Image (cartoon, rainbow, N blue to C red; front, side, top):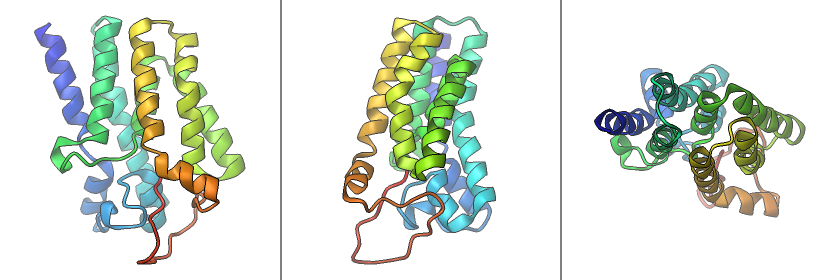
Length: 209
């Protein structure tokens, strides 16, 4: 029980390490919270930092979710402990203790968690994201579609009630964090992938996935 508790706490702390903020600071780029959509995630960093740094952020956020869950899985932990560890890493990304509890949307971190639970489920969810993103060029819409499908996909590959509850909760938070994206999509004002934002002090920021 003590080991499980420590693992869950460590997962939250690891999740709290904002890859976007750290990577931008190390490379001399501006704080992503002050640029574009203000979201510390790969999509926003892509707009002002370029592909290389965005890829680093993407994989960094994904690894934050993958490593803690994979570590506890390899110790033979119960599905409940695995689910709680995944939830802790995800909440750490959304509400990072090191950055004023203001984090990103959690898409890449969620993918890392799913890959650790079942690599086939993770690849299937990733395929959903890639299909929507490649055809419609909306990162947020791709994230929403992947979020809706993730609980069912995970259940198909690993039917466990604790993991299913964690996935439903995680997907619900992902969708909730995309409220502004949903509004923008409905209004036709959502930015497409690869579009650079033009500063407009009077405009409302469009949030990223």
